[in-house]
Length: 440
Image (cartoon, rainbow, N blue to C red; front, side, top):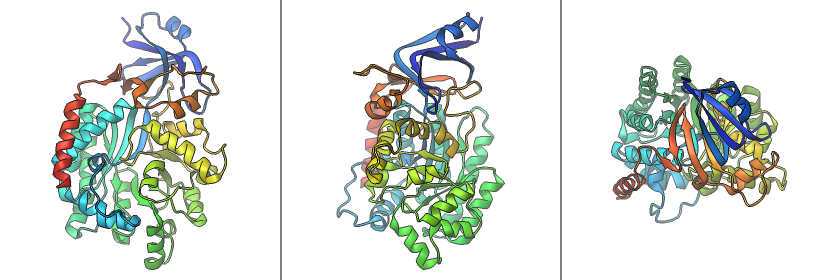
């Protein structure tokens, strides 16, 4: 008997860079896609394979969320008192004292459990998470890993190391990342990985930043940092370091392909030049940048320069359909150009482009040899589907509720809109309980 199976659909988007095709599908053996093509051809070539018919659905790659803070869900609706007056006020008077400094491992576990459920439910199969919870060390990342493994998601986890809590905590943050990297590599059953991460230039000094990049190179992982999320960091760097943020990184020799810079909102022309010329990768969070008043990142300008950019939720709204819609609409308004950020490009950034931003090979597209990470999305639109309009239909008029089935690494994780082995009511109840603890 065959050990492969076929998934077919009315329409397939194998790659957002190519037109959608009707009546296509994929063949999967174990965790890998081995064949792609018209359904009739697949069943002819593999007559013994069972077929899962995605009738009335679109078959497409699973989403890649390049930047999420899973713990952030605990802060949804938290009373803020006086509204922060700017980005620095948002961090110093609200986010650090009321959220990150108050997190413990029980809170982190509950948030991770719910967000993994919600990401799966909305078609996300791969994500990169950044945890900053200085009073949860050590082993907070191992708590996250155990939950992500249980959900069988493809995750990259890191701790946002920082010096703002003193030298001992700064050391513990870097050590937390190294420990997670090594734990993942010693666990062949897991599809979770680790990376290196530090916060920003204004919470980490030059020797500390250089050590973080050295540890990343030593362990062959990327190094992540937030960059110019608002106007604060660039101005701070000019005053204290004598140059803009990315200029500083270039001067100390760390701007390059091993650097994943998130946000990149308030960027000078010189900083965009550095990102483009050195190969720094970028993750873009259109919705959360609005929430914190950071601005709208110059993403079209960076894309024109060939910068690799993926989309992320930032832990704000984790439905990648909503994130895509934000990227699709906001840049049209900023540039006064309705042709900016076309839907296929946005969809690419949410799939294969995001995988490239995270340094992942054979993820984000439905191709022979690629990981079997995919989703089936309701295709019952009120207007006809064409090869040219399907990306627009998905970006503008679909949400998590339209995702029917999700597969990660060859395993069904969502069937008929329900996440396997999960009780969403219980997950929400526990998250509310832990949120009440955090808020108090």
